[in-house]
Structure formats: structure tokens, C-alpha cells
Amino acid sequence: MGLGEFFALSSAFVWALAVVLFRRAGEDLPPFETNLFKIALGFVLLWPTILLVEGTAPPSFSGVEVFTAVLSGYLGIAVADTWYLRALHLVGAGRIGIISSLLSPFVILLSVLFLAERLSAWQLGGFGLVMLGLLLVSWQANREQIDLAELRLGMLYGISAVFLMAVGVVMVKQILETRSFMWTVQLRMSGGIAGMLLFIALRGRFAAVRAAFRRPLPWTLIVLASFFGSYLSMLMWLYSYKLIPASVSSVLNQSANAWIVLLAWLVLHEYIGARKLLGLLLTTAGVLVMLLA
Image 1 (tube, rainbow, N blue to C red):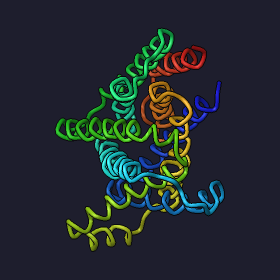
Image 2: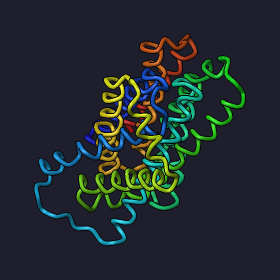
Image 3: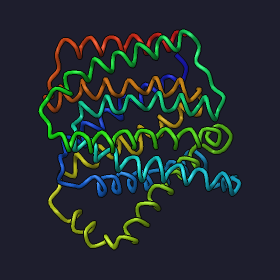
Image 4: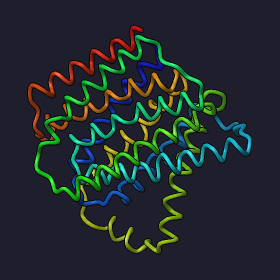
């Protein structure tokens, strides 16, 4: 297993932990404000990381590269993460797993269209096992009682969020490979936070956002989830895309959805049974095939 595969799998587990912690924190802080705090924390933490890793030398980017990285952050962080958290609140951590499983097909499709990538026969087999496992993992969750209107709205938010995540990472992959990694990540983060602040300004929501943050909140859970999701997992996720093909990294990242279901059972006490356990085994088998291919 190379570094790219290691970071892809590690980011999957850390992201799953962040999702469960966000779910555990409840709805005390709305999705928009949760994402704003998450992005702001990641943006702040990246500065000392850049100084430690890159030093004080200015980065080298063309105007097109800066625009692409910033737009990637706006789509993949400001919009997609807000919609993802909204879907999480509407449909729960279990269901969000199957919705998130669409990330890999979206990334593979976009990588074939725009990056000329291909999966080998063995990798396609591993991808099939991962997708079958995720289907089984999420099957029982879809039988739980939920308002139909909320389910449809949550599905719409979730699918749209996952597609924008795929667009955001594919459009910045070549920049990750050829330019400063840490500065590229920070440019994406800048696009995310700037997009959210612009939205607040245009909608005149400063007072509402300020009021949301002044309420009593489970800050320990929110800070931990934001650190894992917007800093640690994101760095490992993007670094895996830098090192290995986007299509391969996306499949390995799909193991996050199995981790979400498992951690939702352990931490949130969501239902898990034989079907989900079989799905977890198939997902693990698919990941192993991908690693050995």
C-alpha cells in the first residue's frame, strides 16, 4: 500500500468520525453556520501549517490556476458541505452513507471525461464490491420511519452536494499535482469561506449568524468534528488525490460510508444487523482488491 492509498483510507475514517460527531452535536447549530465555523477553523489552522511546511516563500500560480482553485473551494466546500450537512440533519448518518456512495461514480465519470483516467479490470471489480457492500450497509436504514418530504429534500441536497464535491476535486487535481499542495488547499479554503461570507452579505444574514453562535452550543463536539472534517481529513483526502489517480482515490474514500454506518451504530446507536455487517465485509473486500490490483 502506497502513501496515496494510505491517505485515502485514513481520510475516509477521519471524515466518518467527523460526520458522526456532527450528527451527535445535533441541530443546535444550523447547517450553514456549522459549515461556516468548520471552514473558518480549517482556514485558520492552515496558516501555521503552511509556514511549517512551505516556509515564507510566496507561491507560484497563474491567474487561471488561482481562479480554478478558488472556484473549486466555493463549489466543493461552501455549497457542497452546507448541503451535505443539511442532508445529514434531514435523513440521518445511516442514509447519508448511501448518498455519499455516489461520489466515486461521479469522480470516475468526470475523471474519464476530463482527466483521461481509466480503471483496470481488477479495480473495476473492487469498485463493484465496494458499491455492493455500501448498498447492503444502507439497506436497512432506508426502512426506518421518516417523513417522505424530508427524505426527498434530504436526497436532493445530498446528491447535489456529492456531485459538487466531485466537480470541485476533479477540477483542481492537476493543480494539486503541479503546484504547492498546501497553498492550493488554502486557495480552495479561501474560496469556500469567501463564498459563504458573500452569501451572508447579500442576504443580510449577519445578525442571524451572530445570534446562532451566541446560543449555548456543544462546542467540544463542534470543534472536534470541524478539526477532523475541515482540517485533518481534508488534507489527507486532497493529498491522496495528488498522489494517485482521482478514480482510485475516490473508490478508496468510499470506505468512509461503511465507517459512518459502523460509527453511527457504536456512537449514535443507530440500527445495525446481519445485512449491514455483510455490507461492511464486502466493502472491506473491495478496498483490499483495489489495494492489491
